[in-house]
Length: 78
Image (tube, rainbow, N blue to C red; front, side, top):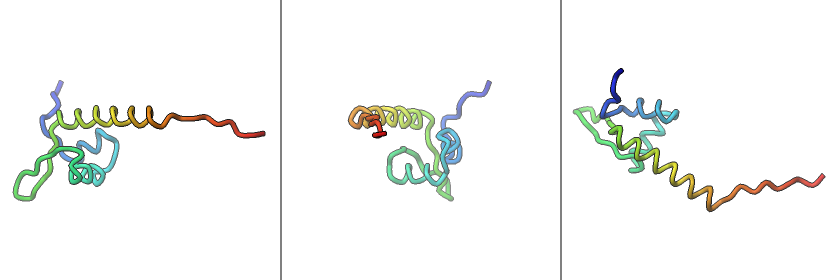
């Protein structure tokens, strides 16, 4: 069984998050998802641990949002 690599490409991260590489690039450029730029062509890499921390942070932010904005099921008049 292969271990998870330490560093992931933006395409790898996009696959994990089920989103586009462009969206992942935007997360990295905004500083929401820590990454490093390597090589002469400046390829981005995201450390697996950073991705997991990002996911946990998004869960926490979502919980806060849901707590602050409860869903109210308003019945429609008949």
